[in-house]
Amino acid sequence: MTVVAPARAFAQPGDAEPEDAAALVAALGARARKAARGLAMADTATKNRALRVAAETLRAATAELLAANAADIAGLGGAADCASAAFIERLRLDAGRVAGMAQALEAIADLPDPVGRELARFKRPNGLDIRRIAVPIGVIAMIYESRPNVGADASGLCIKSGNAIILRGGSESAHSTAVIIACMRSGLAAAGLPEDCVQSVGTAGRAVVTGLLRAIDHVDLVIPRGGRGLVELVRREARVPTLLHLEGNCHSYVHADADVAQAVAIIRNAKLRRTGICGATESIVIDRAIATVVLPALVEAMPDCELRGDAEARALEPRLAAATDADWDTEYLDAIASVKLVDGLEAAIAFVTEHSSGHTDAILTRNGDAAQRFLQAIDSAVVMHNASTQFSDGGEFGMGAEIGIATGKMHARGPVGLEQLTSYKYLVQGDGQIRP
Image 1: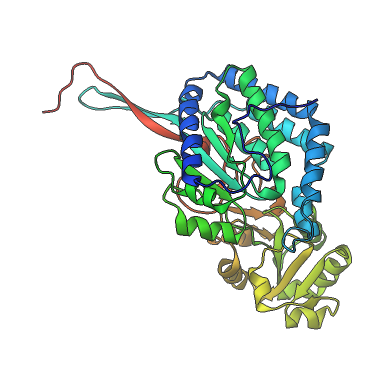
Image 2: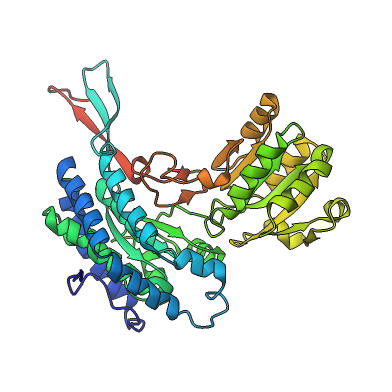
């Protein structure tokens, strides 16, 4: 099946930087704003139809999408920052991952509509009846790197929550993104909704990113999802409100009262199930009281992972590679993990607090009191007990999908799904009241 997108849906892969990035952003924003007004008035059944047709179109376009993805991977060349196995793993699509994108769209369609929910209602002594109602945010700009499925997930969540979205994917996934966006727009068209609810800037230039970050007249919220360089650019240039998705330097702490076999199995999954996702454990923290048992078990269970330990850990287990101070703050996104020994629960809390990126951290223990202390003390967006950090995912939280894991503390935190993509307004019903 060949998916044909409208000519103005997105620029073509390989396009040069536009001469006037601000004008491009303004044009995209104006179309998105108009489309958002139409989408905001759509009923649930219509939005769900758009999502289901988009899912069907994605499945039908599997061969075309995989060919586009192969072209993206072939185009990486020898770029040092793009040719690593971990980077390619994040970029690569296969039939299973395409099916997963389609299933995520259908899962979003099955979820309750967040728009129009009554969040609160109260009556004032003067008789005014006041309701707080969930409404779409408006126009959202999503800036992301490498993983093409983000375009489908973000578009699906925005359609269901009544928001128009402008996507700026990385140049490395341009061919894949073009096909995905065309499928999403096909779903919108089939449901009679404005196709410009989903658009892409289509260009790799950073000037357009800066334009989106400054487009206060056209964009209501920017969600960046990428590495440290993107985050720093956002912090420096943003004028539009942002919902930051920082890197995932996630920790798994093996407490003295852990079930060792269970802890080792959890850590193997947390590190190696998919090394290129932000919920992967990057740092393994081990209580000294149990280290002589845990370290050999970890090395035996993870021969396909490079474990880098501090001097004390290496003295106990010589098969560990040497860690440097930089390792404690590194998001590897690869089959590498740092190993740190600590003296008890409070030392573990202090270490995790110092080095965590605030994404997801876990404690592995059978001691309920220790678990509660860790859960309360660690100020990350997601804190777990006896579970793999790779569960830090919108789909696993029952959200259908996610637009990212927010690591800040304002508006939304943790997996950002449908409810987090709404704002609210007050509806006030009177009967002739005037203010004295």
